[in-house]
Image (cartoon, rainbow, N blue to C red; front, side, top):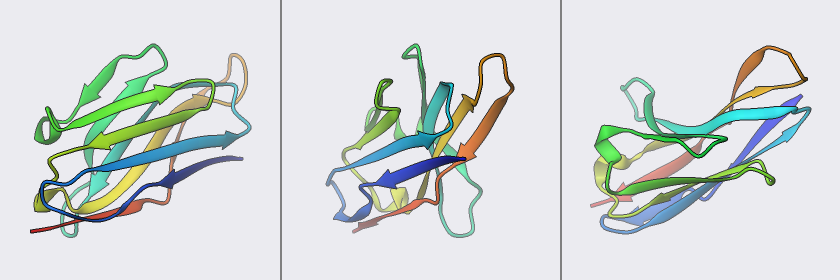
Length: 121
């Protein structure tokens, strides 16, 4: 079993900041990448940011310049620092991990349960 535990969501005023954390635990051999996606009511789930184990990042266009993703490989943890938050950033933020459970095994994708971020105007 693999679990992704998210924390850090909440209510913040426009222009404010929040930091999300996600830690992977369980039967994990290696993590190839971790990241964050979000889904607002009525919208499709969209990429926020991802980071590979080597440190390469991919940032969604709508959050570039405002959100920063970082990772701590030994802790199997990924962080999302969000600044200059806007009401349109309001969504459920989901942690994502692509990992192997054993050496030479297949890659699997896992999702966290999501954490709500609400930005008031």
